[in-house]
Structures are given as structure tokens and as C-alpha cells.
Length: 156
Image (cartoon, rainbow, N blue to C red; front, side):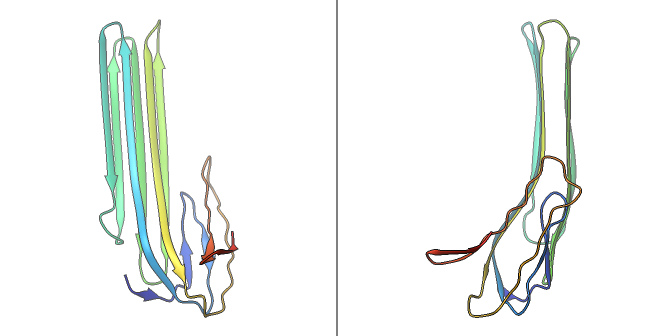
């Protein structure tokens, strides 16, 4: 990817705005994915289902996946969703991950879902910049930004 001047970068499962002034940012990699899996076992029977979708490039990624596993004694279902895009001025992402598992007797049920956005970028160290950010409207989600140059971390 080529160097880009970003006015704002929005990241995370909620929104993580990052203001960068007078800096050149080089996007060096991105990983946007949604995963869901469900598994149940009771007696000698089992059922499972799983799906993963990965953004093929930096363009728009709008996906919703649902999986379920069902036996008479147990059920599990999981949903993973993401709407995200990367363009010359911003990275925007919203995601949802839910799971539900129900059992009776000695049955086992497992549900797992996630919606992840990761962006790796380099800042031209010869330019001035400021960095502000926050994560809002998230539950059990994290957003981390690190600016660094060889042998020195500039800011977290």
C-alpha cells in the first residue's frame, strides 16, 4: 500500500477515532475477521458447526454469520457480524458477537463468536503529529494504539 495522509482512523469493535495531524501514515497490514462456532455433545451423539469470514482486502467488509448445533439434550448458537471499511482517510468498524448455550442432564454445549479488526500502520517520524483516541459503546472489547520507531516506543 502507498503512503496516505489520514485525517481520522476509526478502529475496534466499537469506534476508535485517532486524530493524526501533519503526518504521513503507511498502512502495512490489516486483519478483519468474523468467526462463530457451536458445539454440543450428549451421550454418544454430537453436533458442531463453525464458520469464519476474512476480509480479502482493505475494501468494504459487510458480513453476518450464524451457526447452531442442536441435540435433544443440548443446543448452542453463535452469531458474528461486522461492517467495516478502509479507505484513504479512515478505517471504520462496527461489530457484534453473541452466543447462547443450553443443556440438560450431563450434556455439554459451547458457543463462541468474535468480530475482530486489526490495522498495522507506520507513521512518518519526520513529521509532527498528535494522537487522541477512545473506545465507546463496547462490551468486553479493547482498542490499543502504539506509535514507535526503531528501539523507541513513542506513545500508547
